[in-house]
Image 1 (tube, one colour):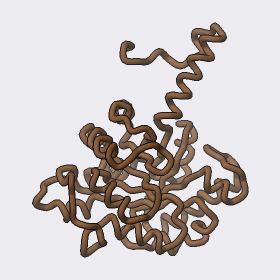
Image 2 (cartoon, helix red, strand yellow):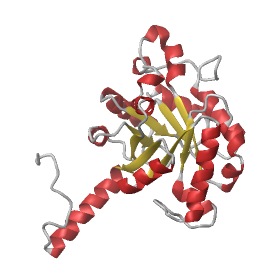
Image 3 (cartoon, rainbow, N blue to C red):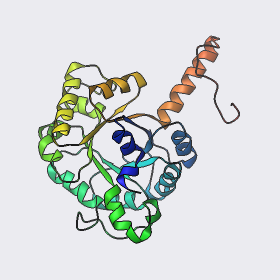
Image 4 (spheres, one colour):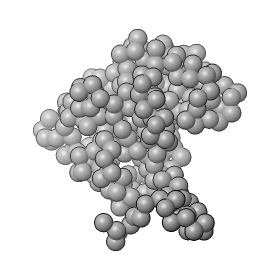
Length: 270
């Protein structure tokens, strides 16, 4: 598989935004359900979720075999973890709390084989990328490294960070970005101070030819972010969706308002 074969890059080539969802639990059944829901891929969260390296292999296989893009948010820019995630089958890496050019360089360097980077040779799942006899070239053409901008320091160093060669793009962590600026943790925010920071990131990304994404919850807000200039959104996820649907159904049951809850769903409902 080449970068052009990513569902995400296929969307972008067609002038369309891409859509990812987030998974925090190490369940291939949940990952399968999410991918079958019409997203372009799934971000497996190793930073805040409960996913380890062993479970990551099956999760990436599940999404990849269904034609989606398996992304992984690693805990940090430590090269060993990035290489583990790639060997498990990730096509995209999202690195949180990147504040300096050096951290971005560490991320990118771990994502690519020599001569482009310092990724160690030990592909346990080469078939995830295509023909094994051309694995290294194919892998180097496939991996998409993204930094997360979430702090005042990161905002101050946008141009230094975004000018790192072979960086694919940036993802905004909205809650932390607002919180570290003293605005309180905000999600799906319409606070003009928060939106101004989004515009600054988008302007810098455009200057450096990078793709930009953001975590969202509400589909209407996701469309607002696309209109603002984002190339993709990471909308919703497993735990939040399950909790919200359950809460809506429970509230409807308790109130007796049969039409006010979530639609019936489950393995026996078609």
